Length: 323
View 1: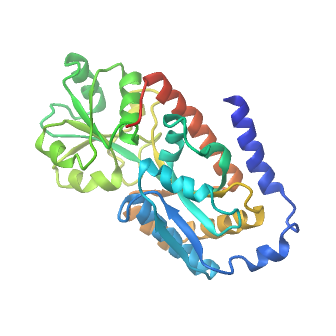
View 2 (view 1 turned 90 degrees about the horizontal axis):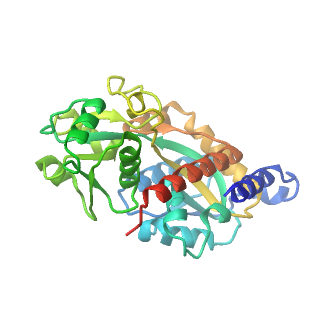
View 3 (view 1 turned 60 degrees about the horizontal axis):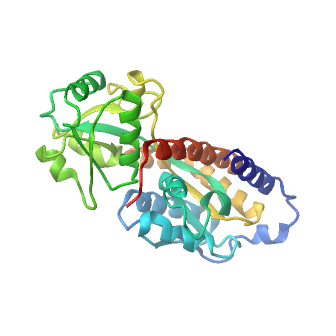
């Protein structure tokens, strides 16, 4: 794994360090036609919503259309294969998320190697999660939840979007680190009706999908999965305040096929980071429950690699398998 890490970071650093004059004339004209922007999730899902915002930002700043192409299925592997098999000419961009990092470990027989075959472009936003419970569960804090789970092993059912999903992996890491026994219930469709009715008692959910239920009191948020308390939810403690070292957040970012000219990667990166600094864009992201995560291509490469090492270890040590 260390060898893979070094190769990944070396490739990313080398791409940024290529001489700016090598494709100078090409870069000055880029983009000269619409850019295909592949999203591995259905229209209306959070990655699609974020991608459409980013596409609009890039269209306004670079003067060409960034055309969303939804390619859902196979935990985003269909979209990733399409994106990574495209020409490395700067006219295929992909919205990537934490799921792509999970898939590298969960699906050992893919036709591509995500860590090897992408050119990281930059981060867009992080995506905090909340641990939410049905209010009938007699707990209000993480310490109370852990104590109840230990007193009632296997009796708390927690929902996820399927085996190998972020809510599943985050839940299994909580079980391991807190030393508790929860029963995993994977869903292929929305589990919210069952959580609201009390058939299941807990989930770890992205903030945009959970907050309306929390605001109305339909569900109770007992912790955030971030390293520190969220500015817009200061009264909700983090899991890490009770379970030392626990941190689990999703994210959104951009990639292109490897060997895409560094000038083009940097053009997209600079336009994206400039847009993320715009107060209007920050405000729009805040309404979606996410925070800007601007990074350089090299910084994003390191970020992805660190996440890969963390989550591949969690997946292997907990024995998680994909559907």
